[in-house]
Amino acid sequence: MTLEEVIILFKEKPYYIRQGKLQTAKRLKIDPEMVDKAREALRTVSLNSSTPVKGPRILILDIETTPMQAYVWKRWKENVSLDQTIAEWFMICWSAKWLGEEETFGDCCTPDEMLEEDDMRICYSLWNVLNEADIVIAHNGSHFDIPMINSRFAIHGFLPSSPYRQIDTLDVAKKSFKFSSNKLDALAGYFNIEHKDPTDFKLWKACMEGDQEALNYMFSYNKKDVEILEQVYYKIRPWIKNHPNLATINMTEELLCPICGSHNVVPIPGKFSGTAVSQYQVYRCKDCFAVVRGREKINEKVQLTTIN
Image (cartoon, rainbow, N blue to C red; front, side, top):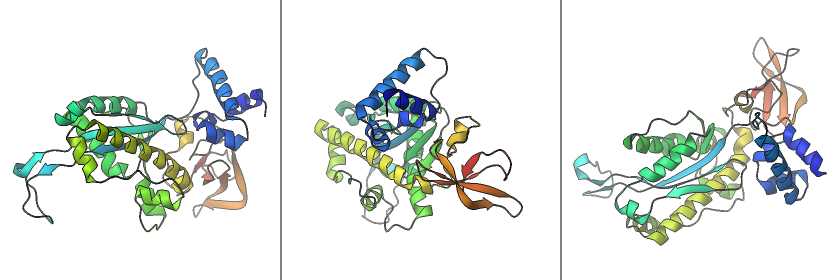
């Protein structure tokens, strides 16, 4: 492909702009340098245009927190009262990346902030990132990461960030599959993805004591979790039945895959899905491989939606 052809393709399919450079180059069978050149050309055009590149901002997110500290009398089945609490938990660090982009970024408490149990600064930087997101992907995010984040935001007096949709990969693993374990590291192993970095409680203890080397390792561990999560998400994405509809978020009437936003959808001949009174054409996305159905009845204008 020539550079001009790649630029035209990126204009027609903006999701290529948001994917990783190497992934895009491999898929299109072109040199990664050409991907950079095409993106730069489009970036230059967009600076002089009032029309932004379409597409939702999808954030991959993970946080690390301290444990609570308390006085207890036994190791198992202990009810801990507020009077027994020595210190509440707080956030050590957070890491994130925009889906398909190369940079993994985040923020981590300093040794002084750890000793003072003060995570306000990193909570504020996370609030600003969440404020940009349309969709947030986290493993056990619905039951851990997001409620924990909201708790710290409320404690620090922050207002809610802009609304975003959530994708919890742990919930997807439980509902759509029967893996022996649904832990992120286990899923990585099933899909031949590099495993998480090794940790034990000594790391958390050292972080709470303000050890800079331990904090550096924790932050690196946190970032790697985000990179693993992105790869796991790509593997299970076609199976997510309640995935936020990217075609709706894009606010377009074009025929798009609701799962990944691709234009590259084709009807599956002779395959229909519907209710007792209506039939809808079934499509396959040739980019994310999800199976979806038209939102309109046969012979009416076609829009796509996820098959539930």
